[in-house]
Every structure is written in structure tokens, then in C-alpha cells.
Length: 531
Image (cartoon, rainbow, N blue to C red; front, side, top):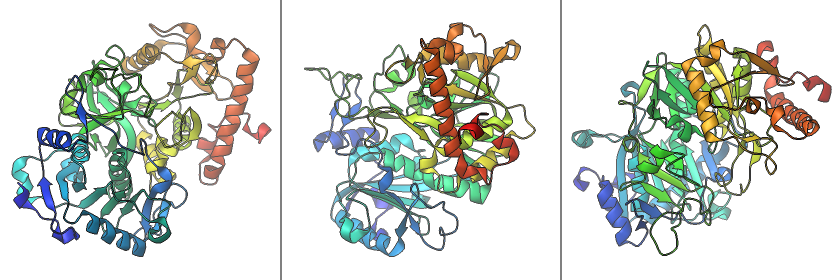
């Protein structure tokens, strides 16, 4: 199959091109090169090296005439000089010349009218297996005429010279929207591949096609009712969308066009720290031949994975094709959603396990994107850290957050779509005192919302945040629903509630000038007192 292409047009000359290898071939290549081993279930286990999470400060976008007035420049979207990119590109392609490299053609967007064709070039076979698992896989007969819209070049062994190349340090992930190239080097963490493509779609779809691109998982029930789960890594998107009673559309990245929600990907990239068959049976069973495990460790003297072992990182991961989940939607799309869940991991232990939001509150909390980054998802995160990530995915949004929020508002306008704030974080106290809300309770709350069981339940209002929370739910202790009641020290809860509300207020200052009066009215009511 390698006769279909060569990479000379990219400046990668005299390379031995391993094109479109099957998962079995990529696994055998990895084992032959001594870059991995097999677990007891047949999954391929690899280490990603120095980087076991994304490095946000080393992710750049080339600033040129195409992006200068469209990208929301700052600490998230860091500008990179186009001439420096060209020079670094030449170094990377020269580095790959004469090497044995792995090339894969694939797609993003499970909607033919919005399909993005991608050619991914990797230095290692296991990184190519990741690409096979995570992106949409074209049929063999279509490859002869495959013309990529974008190229992603991943040279994990190449390290930049920051004093010359314009990078911050030796690793980098750079998106060039004019040349339609992603350049990744100095890191083996495969999440950089996935999130680069997501960032591209977040730039293209809202501007060019008026499609809301979303950092969310999605599933659909037997009544053709689609549900969306927004949230940062570690809040439960993958876990909660893998519901045996509903078909999975996708676990992380989606688009919402006029009447359709469609998956960007062809697979799942799940956290697997403390994974068990009891807690997450679908993910557990997906870890078999063809799956890629990253940075896990075995029980001593065996090749059985010890999912509780965080020796390397809390951010242990598994990548597998979506077909490894039993109950999937084919093709990976559904109708417009009936329910939307904003997942927040509240390490303060202040917010209710579930709250029903008004439209104004939905817009406010979407722009706020409050959660805690959990250990391991980014370099340097070792315990929960409060963050506000606009649209629950600010790290991947090239445009200003209000662009995405405006699109969401238009989607909600005049509909009966229900929006819920779901706290998967702490109860009974803040991190270090309280405990994580139990997964079975969260699942029961979601099920009740999806079935419409809360329509006949009385709701109370949480002071300060003005959040409406249900007073009862099947299989959930009533006192769990009111967060204040779970704290032994009620005065301490009140103090933490005020402290968190102040954090919301401080964060929202940057949106106040452009937010409507309706959205501003959804802020914690005490704000003007503490400001």
C-alpha cells in the first residue's frame, strides 16, 4: 500500500514509509522495536516519556494574515512567528528524512458534509496506532484518491533549540492555519495529536459553517433523545457517557449543526486511573488487543495492569476504537440534544450534585466553565486545582469564548432543551476533608434527568448561587442533594460558598462588558457586596 504515496512533497525525502498499517502490524512493529509490551488482555502498553500530559505553554498558533484578526491571542493561544515555523518545519522534515516513518490517512467529523481529511505522520508505530484508534478510518478503496486537507507531523524524538527556534523549550505543538500543517515535536504524549485536530475544528466550524464545536461527550437513548456532557478531562465525560442503556455517539469532541450532533472522532481516549470492571465496565472491557495503554504499570511479576498504580502519572490513559464499546451509534451522530449536562468537579464541595439551570444560568456557567483540574491531566497538576475554562474547553478554543457561547445561546433559544449543572467533585467538605460524590449517585441523577423524573419533583434554591436542586431522587440519599447538609461544620460551608462565589465574580469580570443583562443576572447574587 505504500506505493500510494510518498512524502517528498513535504520535504521528507528518502524515508521508508510504512503506510496505513493495520493495528496488528503496528503492534508487532512496536514490540519488535522494544517500544512496548502486551498486557494480559492483549492491549499494547507504552510509556510516553518525559511528558505524560499536555503542555499548554508549549502549544502555539502561527500568527499571520489568516489568523491575526480572528484568533483570541493570549496565554492560551500563543502566537508563533511564521518564518520561525518555516525554519522549524524544515528542521523537522530533515530530521525525518531517511527514517522509517509511519503514515496514516484518516478523517475527522462523522458527517460527510463537514468531513476533514487528515494525513498523520508519526515517528513511532504506537503513535500511529493511536491515530488509527482515535480518528475515523476510511475504507480501503477510497485511499487511492485520498487528498488530505491537513497534515500532522509528529516527530517526538526531535527537540527544538528554544534560543533559535522560537519555542519556549524543547517540546512544541504548533498549528499553522495557512499552510494547514500541525507540527509536534519533543513529546510522546499522544493527547497533543488529538487536541491539535480539535483546535483546528474549533477554528473552522464556527466561522465557516456556523456549527457549534463542543468539548463534550454524547449519547442517545431508545427514544432518539440525544444528551451532551460538557467538561474538562477528569470530570467524567467518558465515564458518564458510556451508559449501557444508551448508545454512545462519542466521548469527547462533537459538532452541533442545525439538526444534528456528530462525533469528531472514531475512538475514545479514556482516563484509566483506578479503573475497575465494576465502576466502568464498558471501558474496562474495551482494553483488549488493539487498545493502547499509556504509562500504566503491572502487578509485580505479572503482565496484569494495576490500574491503581500512579507511579508514572495520575493521567494513565487508554485509546481504543469506538467499536470496542458494545453499545455505539452507527454512524456516530444523533439529533439535536434534549438534555445538556455541564460537568464540574467542584473541589470546594459547595455546589449541589445536580442543579437545573435557566437559560441565563446556562449561558453564565458555559462562559464560566468552572471546575477543578484533576491530577495528571496537565504537566505539574498533582492535586485538584480550581480553574475557570470558558465553554468547558478554553485550552482548545482559538476564537474568543463568546463566539461559542453566542452559538449555544442561539441553539437554546425557543426550545425545551434542559440544561443541568452536574457536580462530580466533592461533598461533605472541600478536597482533603470531604469525599468525591459516588459514581452510582451521579449516574442515578443523570438517569432521573434523562427520564424526566425531576419534572414532578420539588426543587429548592441554593443561596448565593441561586441554583435549583431537586429534593429527592431514586437511589440517592436526600441529604446529598443539599451540599450544606453534608458538611459537619455549616459555618465553614458558608465561608467556602462565599469564597467560591467571589471566585466566580472575579473570573466573570472579563465577560461583563459584552455579556447581556440576562446573563449577568445569573451571577451569584452577593457579588456586588464582596467586589
